[in-house]
Length: 482
Image (cartoon, rainbow, N blue to C red; front, side, top):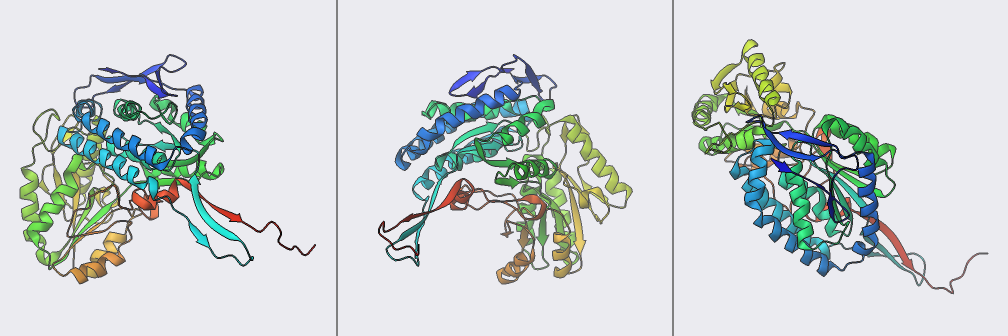
């Protein structure tokens, strides 16, 4: 069991009340970690620490900020084994998934470091003679990041990296499901030399989340909020931010369509579908959630896909498996409900279907139709629907019949055709001849519709974490009409 303390003002401390809460290993049922159960006073302390650190950090030059973030990337990458141990116990994820998380999180810090000299403005022609008019970007202030458990190193790091690069100080509200992982991110940055208060990480018991989040968003010092998680909670965050006039960056749920057109390379499409559907047990916002295949090639595609899925090992995440534990036994029970619902309404089970505790096999349901839960709802697990269509137009229609719009894929040997299809899909991301699951630190990452708004990644994120200001230098002797 990991005994944890939260990070406030450069110090690792307990909750002011002394309360703690336990995170349970979803596979073994044992206590994975014990973390401080923060209250509103702890949240206020984190805000005060970040606000006190902001004037100094915002004046640190881009070269020094870059060097510190680069060092933080190296420190974080060196903790890959520690991240893996904690991730297995807190979330049930596998060691390879933890390793990928750590690698990409280090890349996110390095990309953020490269952006410190790209925070640029412009000179704007003015109608007033003798005036130099500029649009410049400046750090906004204290930024709050709220990160989830499913890709915890990646998303915890993403919640703070660009904010820091832009000269802001940050508070990371750790996920209740992985406090150890998110605190280890904070520890990495502290070890790299970030000044006290620049990075703060607080933890809370699940029952206190709403009160803590509201207190953080309401704090006048907090000027930006970013949240990655469910659309249900994202609506609450967005409403709170609107009430307090705080800009929000929201990356929410997904129901990613994976379209296989009739001229697709079937083996390539099977490869992409297997990875997109079952990476991290389907617990990724970009996970393939609807496999939409043209009827003319569906039999061959489904046979090959089912054969591959049936061979994916599932079990103890400490072993050599592709599918480890879901985040909770309740999440596994939900998968059984999806399967029973589909079979009861006419779907055909072609792979998997079994559950043991918190582990669910890679499962495929063929002939899924509207009205089935797996057609309409985000499963966030390894139960995936196959939807057969008669035409390209129907494939596009089905792809867009969702409240979500994060990631998508189109497979076709005709790239021009695929580009035309991609242009009609309502999503923030579309990959041609690649899986729905793909992320790179420099890419503009985000969705449309109920998948949220705003963009993480690279230059696109600079506008999310800075204020654009109009500054002029004028002739002091200019003439006025009165």
